[in-house]
Image (cartoon, rainbow, N blue to C red; front, side, top):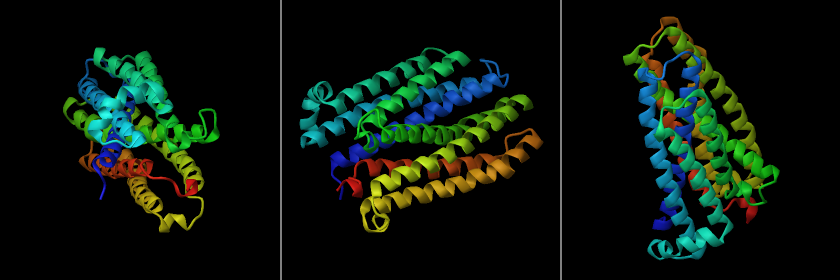
Amino acid sequence: MMDATTLLQIGSTATVNASLCALVGCVLARWWLLRAGARPQDGLLVHLRAWERSAAVLGLVGQGLAMWAAAAVMMGHTLPEAAAMLPTMLAKTSYGRAGVVAFVFLACASFMAWRSALTVFQCAAALGLLGLFALARASVSHGGEGGILTLGMAIEWLHLVLIALWVGGVAIAGWCVLPAAQMSAPTSAVLHRYLESLSLAATAALGGIVLTGVVNAWARLGLPMHLVDTGYGLTLIVKLVCVGAAAALGGYNKLIGFPALIRHDSASAKVIAILRLESVLLAGALVAAAVLTSQQPPAAM
């Protein structure tokens, strides 16, 4: 049974990653809609603001809790004891300093989302800040253990960014943009271009995720047998099953759902349901990934 520290470590990691996905998804959706001709006062973009703000708050809280959990793990203390040692950990360890840098980048992106509705230029700036946040997060992951200027670090960062793009794009489309489109009735051209951008980005992200995921799995498992005879390997299988099922649903929407929706110029309830199911499966993959970060890879033992 997991102790409180491990549960907080896994929960906060999953929360931060989910927040990153949601923020990337919101900012990309806003960018795609603005470029497609939507106006800042349109219902779709107004609805996105609430999601951006909620994701920002969730991410900042999650990052703070992640640092608290990290202090407890690194110092071997209970959570109450670690709270008093947190400032020391943040100031005097590379992990803590990376956590502070990550928090600053996320806070800057969050401030932009809270301050005003983002323009196209501000969307690009916010995505840049979120990319730097992901870089700081990757630097304290298994992939960053060899140092910042390493291939493993670059692959880990790219993997995290692509996951945020895919998960965020799908989740925001299914839970925010398309339901709002049913009420605000945007022009068909705006909806079409948005769906085309989403489909293209999700497809490219999935291809990159598969490549970087294979490299990461090979480096951390060490031997193929570790996929089935270690807890790390079994957790990885759960993650792969979730990703595979989500990819199948995404393929259906790309080949059948989105084209049908575009032909009928309306947000199909079936497409929305599939996007939501896909996002739930991807949320499961995020939780599995958080569990993996709390475990020692077989190749490192």
